[in-house]
Structure formats: structure tokens, C-alpha cells
Image (cartoon, rainbow, N blue to C red; front, side):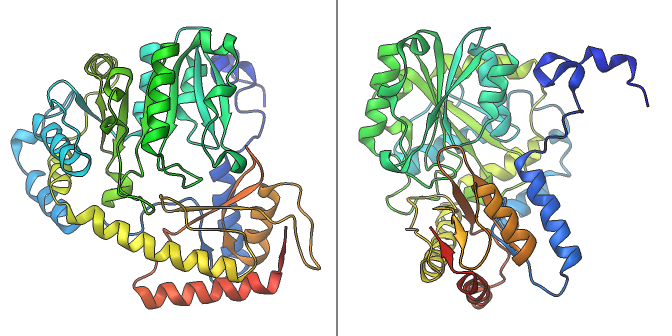
Length: 410
């Protein structure tokens, strides 16, 4: 079949005339396909799913109750545009209660349809062709992808074990710093689980001021902090002068799929984001914003979710350690980041974490996420479905049985 006339019209940013022809698969699409294959070929074998990572419970009852009430109110039927004050005020109360951060809800907070779109839009506020965004790797690539879409480039800061999984800000070449406009941080970090100290944030603020760079702190896992109380970049003096923090209702409030989050911090940056956003969407459904506000006002919700995932993480670390893996409790997130085996005794050898991950899902129905950006690591998520603690223990026992039999070699 010949190409349609518009094959030559696709923009270079998505591959130009070669769009759709390279056959490359997104990491998570590979995992989804391998899961389907494993389930089809081995229906007798339970799939142990430590993969992509989405909260395994429905949104809390208080959130669903408010949603049920608000969905039938005619005043919620219209466009929300840049958000309703009720949600912004709830976000401000949350930031004050949890982190001691005082924000003006009208000028220093703006909602978005989940946090992912924020990382697509903020580069649009700053990046011109030739500009640079500093991105930590491994990490969430959206801000970097959109930087490239706008004609900018990305300078990667590898998160290495020898640097305690912190970006080395002193390693950035001078010519890169001259063109850099954004640095995207993420704490607690996905996938490494590293949490940030006040000292690191202070260094990042000093770095941003010295080099005239905007800090974007991804706080999607903010409430899933294990080695310290949940913290905010904005709680550190000077932070609001140099950047913003982005929050999500997904991880800490079991609101995966509801698509609601917010950006907060420097008033001028929030304003630029709001203006850019206003040209691209008409806001999230007001009933969802009001339901999310109810969730934000219930301090027990993130505490209960954090307790559950901490418990599960402790069990997983103990299980994997028993099976010969080199792992410790992460500082936060529901992800465990552990070195990938180089081989299994009497079995295949591996050149990458992706090869290990594909072997585990294909041959043993154990789903993980591979990372080969800064060393070879596997990411295990504790968001597997388990009805109660007994079910968690059963899943850990089955995990131990399969991995102990494999005997990983590092």
C-alpha cells in the first residue's frame, strides 16, 4: 500500500515523513504486550505484577460521595477554564497543613487536568529554539519531550548510585548553563525512591539564582515519603523566587484516572502557565475539582495510603533480599529501584535490564519495569492488587518461590 499524501506532512518533531514506520515501542507498551502474552500462554500461572504502577484502590469514599452529589448540580455544567477558587483554596490549605507553605490561592495556585499536562505546558512558557531543559534520568520524560517539540534541547543529569541518586549540578558544562532555562527535579524521586534534603534544595535554589534558571519540582509522590516527613521544595526559603512545585491527586489520594493536579509557587510563573493553559484547554470538570477539594481537606487519606505502601514496601524489600537481590527501603514513592541481575544461575546472561525484565515476564510471569539510563536497574511497584495483608503475604511467598529458584547473579 502506498503512503497517503499527508505522510510527507507530518512534523519533524514526531518523525516527519518516517512517522509510524520505525516500529519502535514505548517502554510501557512493550511491558503491556508481554503481560498479555504471558497471560495467554500461561493461564495456569498467576501474574505477579510489579509493573507500571497505578494505585490499586478506588478513590476514597469521601471523594466519591462529593462527586456523586456535585455531578447532578447544574452550576457545575460549564467550562472551568483556569479552575475554581474552591479547589485552589483547598490546595492552599493542604500546602499549609502538610508543609507549612503559605500560598495565595488566587494568584499562586492553578489547577490542571492531572500533573502530566503541566510538564507539557511549562516548556511552552519558556523554551525557544536552542534553549535547554535540564532533566534527571531515569525519570518522567514529558517536559524533555515537549522541550524538543518547541525546538529546544535536553541535557540529561544521570542519577547514579555513587552520587546517592542526586543530580550533580556541578557537572553541567558552562555552554549548557548559558542556554538552560528550566531544570526539572522530582522528589521523592521516581523511580529511584530518593528523597531530597533541605540542604539539596538550598543548593538547587542557589544554583537556579546564579544561573538564572527556573526550577520545576515534580511532587507527584510527595505524600509517599518513608525516611522523613513529607516535604515541599517551597518550604525552603528562596524557593518561591526561582520556581514552582507540581502536585497530583493520583498517588497520595488514590485518584488515578481522575486527572486533577495543580502547579503552585512563583506568582509570575503560575500566571504564565495559566495564560498558556487557557489557550489549550477549558479546565477540568468542576465536580471533579470539588471532589478533589474534599480529598485534600481530609488529612487521614494520604496518611493511610502512605502506611499501606510502606508496609508493602517493607515486605517486598525483605522478600527480594531473601532472594539475593541488593535492595534497601527507598526514601519514598511506591517504587523499589534495584540493580538488575547479570544472569541467573544455570540460565541466560543479560546485557541490559530490559533483557532481564522481558525474561522475567515471558518465562516466569513476573512483571517489572527496566531502566538502563544510568546503569541497569529493575523497578518493582508495590501497587499490585491484594485485598488484605494475608493476600499481600501470599503474593510475597509466591514471589520468593519463583525468584529463589532462579538464583540471581550480580
